[in-house]
Amino acid sequence: MCRAALGTVDLMRFTRARDLVATGIVTGVVGYLLVLQFYGDLPRLPTLAGITLLALAAVEAGLAGVVRNRIRRGTIALQAVSIARAMALAKASSILGAIMLGAWLGLFGYLFPRRDELAAAADDLPSAVVGLGCSAALIAAALWLEWCCRVPYDQDEQSPERKYGTPG
Image (cartoon, rainbow, N blue to C red; front, top):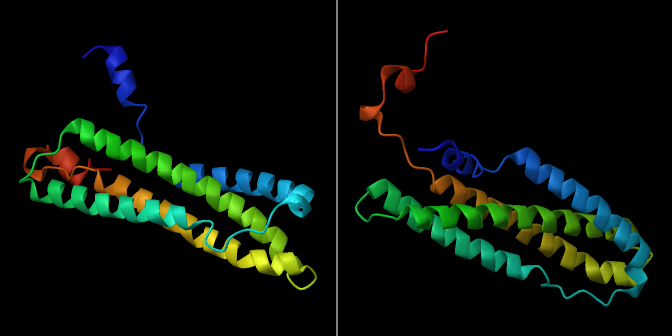
């Protein structure tokens, strides 16, 4: 295989927690600053504003179960393209979940201390809590889908060094 083709394989890596944390922190800070500046101009938030993320999480959790069962059983072949698409969906969803978690955290960070002095803050606080939970569910489902796309190693075909590790 040519070097250029091998380079494209390296582009698809499993999601790292530090990338999601960094994305969430940056989005949270930016979201907090935007809410701090423009909260008075925002309309009332619907309580179930973040529920779409929960629907996405449910779809991805279902897909993860199907992929996991098919890979483990090995009876129904999955095309490599299907696994790559599932991986891309999982990666994009985990990043979306981190962005939305940061945005909801920024909103929550603004609303929670002001819930006693602003009636609007007390009314919008449940929306932020629902959004936080749904965002976390999307991240969890996306990471599980990504994990389910991993192919278990065939222990019989590995060399002893790969099977047991190289001695120290």
